[in-house]
Image (cartoon, rainbow, N blue to C red):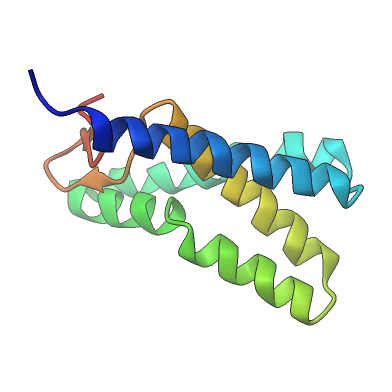
Length: 119
């Protein structure tokens, strides 16, 4: 039997991140409709696969790492730009949900090969 603990922890981390981002979003009284409208926006990065698996994986991975949305939200807090915070929180929540259900960063070998599992 393989050691499933690291993968389980990554799934749990995704749940916690998604719940925290959504809770903070509503705590700050941001509009629910914007959350709904932008919830799947990071998945538009899959269009990169039209240029092949290398470009597709790179585009998807850039849009599905926490670095950019956390930076966007932090900058939004620092310069008092609510829209940047809202977009950052929705983006973070999206990534968290993806991780929670097993969608990870993509390898060049194919869309279904992720750092969490083969989907």
